[in-house]
Length: 126
Image 1: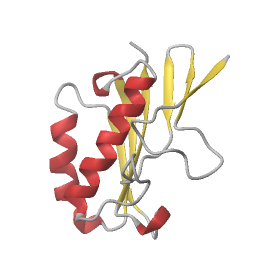
Image 2 (image 1 turned 180 degrees about the vertical axis):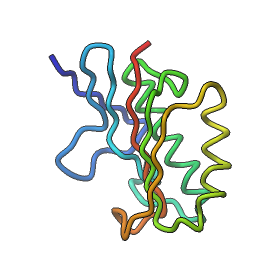
Image 3 (image 1 turned 135 degrees about the horizontal axis):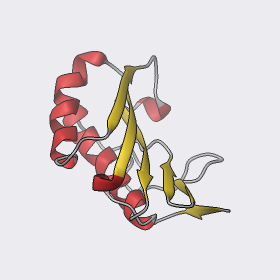
């Protein structure tokens, strides 16, 4: 049976999807973008600021689902511009400090609300 995960510590879904879905001991998060959870607005700032907000949102969803960054086994990262990869990676490395999960990182033509970054994950519930 699947369980829908939702938390006010991360922005509400802006479409027909859930923040995360738990099935057994697996947690699948939707892509997190740099929205402020309180206002629902995109945070102002460069890739460093936006990546920090994205990963803070992701951490909140993981926690709500009974997981953590340490239990993430795969992330998929979407960048608006691959020129931002080094700065994105520097912030990402501050969150994933232990054994790093598998990861794909791709540049895309456009992201929701014209943000610079989006990250989704698959984790094992702790």
